[in-house]
Image (cartoon, rainbow, N blue to C red):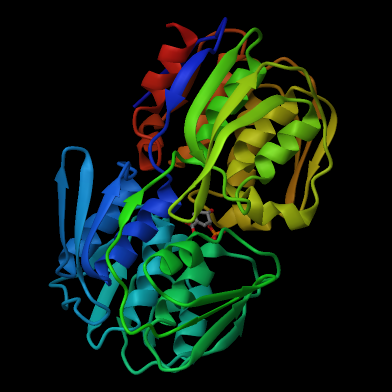
Length: 426
Ligand code: S3P
């Protein structure tokens, strides 16, 4: 699909966003291995979460939708059944990595794979530690498809070479199966939704700094879960309100987990007018309404330590940096080369087409602003966050911007372009 984006004169109003994608995957997977029913409100309805639902159904889990709620009929830690045929995760890295942890704890063999992008993304990072726990993982060059033969795991004490919530979560979920304590240590603490959700379902989780321990629970118990709006989707709308002059936007009920909010802190440092109101805690996750108005921006220095806490927001941060006064240097972000696309490359190619001043380095980007963006025909590189970032860039370009393969926004934020049009008054 070709999406046309026009320069915006305003970006104002109120919006509620689809449920957080990361938390949605976890509610479904942990609900599936809990006992009893888990009732989920505001589950993300994008393609990635749908991939998790379809994999779980193939593993024998009954999942129903009724009146906007999702009911997961849990089968207990050992109640999943051997699927007929391979599990297909589509484009979803979170599905393949987290589910592999659960599959490693099952007594049967499973094949799991995904689309072309998934088949290129590194899986050694989960395969190696799962093998250390005793699972048999067969994969050519440690890339998907993965053949997983689990059962009889032993706990490990594992130091992650790179901070990754997907890898950490994979190991914590596998750590629910063996007798004894599994400990995972990260170089920098990544998003902790798995730890928080497991605790809600009754698991004993111990956290110390960037380390976390889990042990086999007697059981996990089904829960009533309400998923907050996705901060990573909110980031695009926040950026639009900051960039389009005269805007005033309220985003209701957004997750503000401190392992995810580095983007908000950074925007504050850049001079954005942001406020969080109505802060509360829901299912062990902090939630707030975010109020934002347009402002002029200055460049910031990003330390490599903050990258894991704004990993998904770097594409939209790059767009903001083109409008900030001075040089914004992003370094220590080599993980971006292993996302749905090589994001450092995708951002650079598109921003160069828009005549921004950008330099790609091996582990980051150097962007000098402010420079007006020129409209162009751009590609999404089949990457939802690239499509949405450049839709926002299109709002401040000089005329019509075209984004090819724009439909991939549905991976995490269905309805994205409609909401964009509504808030610009188009
Ligand atoms: C996610 C973790 C992050 C993030 C991804 C979702 C998760 O990946 O980029 O969109 O839900 O755990 P890494 O943990 O591999 O950095």
